[in-house]
Length: 341
Figure: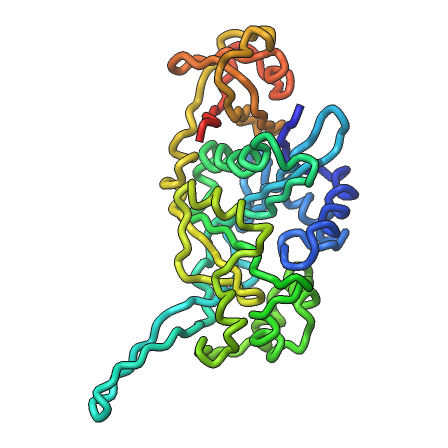
């Protein structure tokens, strides 16, 4: 069975291996063991009954309980930008008019901003190649919305997601090569790694504060502003289906799009319902019932599964497998989200 649960210390080796597999550009999952150890500790603190006073990390893994393999990951980060600035480029239009020439000229401008300070970010979405089937990607992506709904008071009113920016077949980012590299003097993967592991101070030190005129960039760099990496296209389509939209903010390194949505407007957050477990059946008895994404809403042993169940109003009948995986019994309350999206 596939179970989503909070990451724990013993997952560090597998997560480190996943980092190496994702390659440069996925800032939230750098191949640095000490970073992973610190993140898992912070995640454990965030999943406690008392939420952290400032930023929190809710890092979860998709575990194949038959093999013990970590097949994927997903995470929620709260209060971003409070301790370390969260930088974005805001893409806007500047319009100038000359009366003498009777001509209006418009330019696209990139402004360095911290507009998402305090927002909640969802990210670190990964699925091992062997598991990229049977709707598992949607399961991992939508599972975090049960956490957003169940612990709504811990999250901001705006949720964002940074999409990995476009790279060519050689793994190079045209946006970085023609803009960021000019100011940092680093290869893309080095700058991306420093941002993930060492924080954003080097950005504060070296990034230009003046607007960047997009027209002055080569066409190859202009063309990829707001364009997601091919490996992020599916994840972005899932976010758009949930109500997220591109609001003209892009990543300062690779120009990848940042999408946003009001937390209470996310379709899956709106669709989550709480039910009382009234009966546990043999799994075969529910073979013809609908499948749901189910969460036990227990911070001491948080679990999410995708299993068939029978819902009648505020009551739910679970299969034995789901009951065991969620560690719930009759009388307990669980959150449910339909899978037919």
